[in-house]
Length: 138
Image 1 (tube, rainbow, N blue to C red):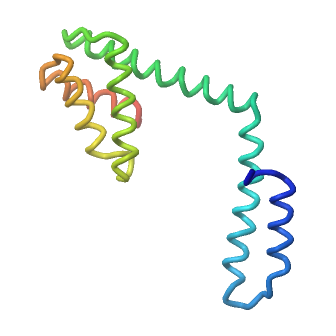
Image 2: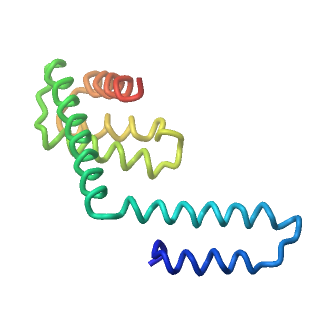
């Protein structure tokens, strides 16, 4: 509803009707940019771009889980793809919920803790987490 063209047009007209005082021009300009952004969001929420974007994101997520599984296998700790997918998902969510830049610290702690819970030794969990972090950041 917030991205409907008529609603956006109504809000833009309401912005034009506001009395412009010099101290409010920056706020009005910011609101215009927000309305433009909402119009762009509508384009991204169409079924085809949304489906393609979701499939690309899921594919990348599974590639990272497979890479993590390969790292653990190379370290002599075989974890299943399901386990590494859970580790990657929890790592990503932990990083986002921490509100720190790039989830620094919390995502690594989550990854190491879950890997240890799945039976990986601490040294292998730390090494795999650092290698994956470096590989995804670089």
